[in-house]
Length: 163
Image (cartoon, rainbow, N blue to C red; front, top):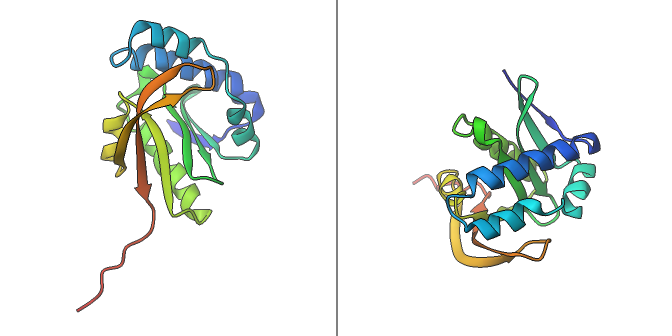
């Protein structure tokens, strides 16, 4: 059974462990081993704790197991993180988390979301309605530079005029 809740400070270590595992396994098909090694060895960025304290990090559990998490910066509209345990991928967990982050953004009055998608994550975000703006180099907080795709999603409701 899946359950979702807002993350707390007590969850930070487990969230980062899941993220590290996801980088090592899920991203390995799209990035060189040296990049994966440096990326997965990085310590958590201060933003993860800050967003957790702000109440904008959601986690999903399958039974007692942490299955994924997503983080949203409600001031900028940036999806700061979205990771699913590699053993749980393909089961709708990432989409459920992204939908929940979108609902949070709409409730906060945001007009759009944006993110720097990993190369392996880009198809997922396209299926969720994000548009690729350009490929870019993202400077990770650890100092490494990672190739990614800047993407955005318009959250404004479009109403078609009745003729």
